[in-house]
Image 1 (cartoon, chains in turn green, cyan):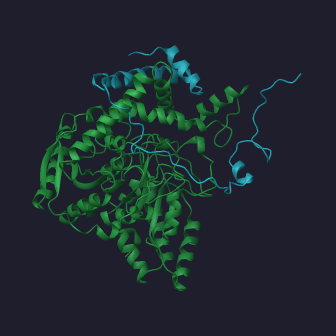
Image 2 (cartoon, rainbow over the protein chains, first blue to last red):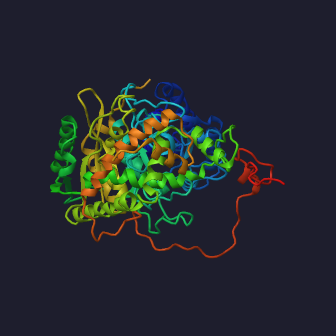
Image 3 (spheres, rainbow over the protein chains, first blue to last red):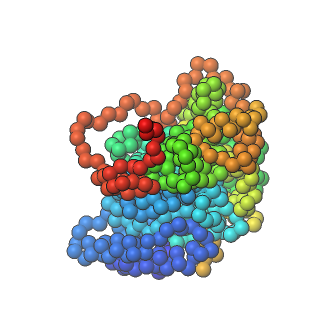
Length: 487
Length: 97
């Protein structure tokens, strides 16, 4: 069996038992990328030589009887916004076209320590800003289910490469839905952990109080393995939380008895396509048939989440992206007469339209005279959004609903209408504002054969509950086994 | 709330972003549209609500005051657009006599 068809658990088991070796696993993965990625455009960079060397070292370690890490032999693709020493880390931007970090991100160190095989760097919306991959400076990733449609974003390549079974798992980042939205549109599992669960050290910052790194996988067990490997305290990120990491991969198969699922009225209101509503309702019925109890809950401030987000995230972005000054690293303009022109010209040439739009919005929202009206107001509404979740979770264990209002939209359809594009994240954004974990799992298809996702959300640090609830659904259905046409 | 082209030009200058006239025109319309949308926050009564800056409310996090290694100079300069091997090179900002 080719590694390209195996789940994460099957891949690791095949390596551990000696059924296969790391060299074959790496070669099969690289062959699948060669065969499929021309049509998908998920990868920005595949370092075949480095992948082969990692595999050889791993095989040698197994031969000499050394202990093996949690992810031994598992091919992992990485969103190109996570610093990897000596490898290009472009963030999908002309600004960082030639940037090679001198250090590894915390999660990359963790993956190496767990003996994963780092296979390549995946495409994204520039600096993780976008919902369609159309903001990448380099290429357009296509949805493996329909090449005329978006895979979602910003972790477009990480979602598409797993959906097209090029790698069983990958890493993405989620600031307003950038893991859950593309997972939903590509028909795979994606999980955004609680803010602080995974260190952001070495994640190129977009909006620091919202960004969180998380896994994509073809099944729930794969996401549990990857989350277990990357979670935990890191003193280099002052927002990294110091609490024990449960063995997610051990508990994921235990169903939850007496599960109470909250269904937010606001997530089934105006704007939700009837076809998506009906598939998601069907998924909730599956839970009911498994003994779960469904209860209506209210998230009265959720309708303000997009507005709050598009003040808070651009404000943080305008600050974080001030480091791209044409001096320390990144693009520098040729045409300047003064320092001010060097800064402005380098930034004007290096950044794409969406990044400029968000820097401008953030600069405006933070400027004297507007700071209280926009930024502080949004932060107050953020607290009300969090309180809505706290109130709801007093009554239920999990909140469930749609991931996106529609299935994957056509490429080019929303590109000239930023506000309409922003609204595709309407159900995912509030989890980032509140800091709670959320997952997307495949739960059906549209009439035209496009995947539809179910979003599950849990209280802070209840990833274990989230994964077990997701696995309950996966055992009872076969949506996760459906694959797009593969060459 | 509509923004004027001059206001957008001022914000671009604060943000150190050189924008073409076409970009400025597009952003004037788009930013006005987005600001109209976010004005819905005015409907929310936030009297007595503390701003929530972070998703997890943190106390100060300190590390022990101990010397630790830093990035070697060659690596710190490796990605710089211009360097003389010791420093980042920038245009002259002080006039010579």
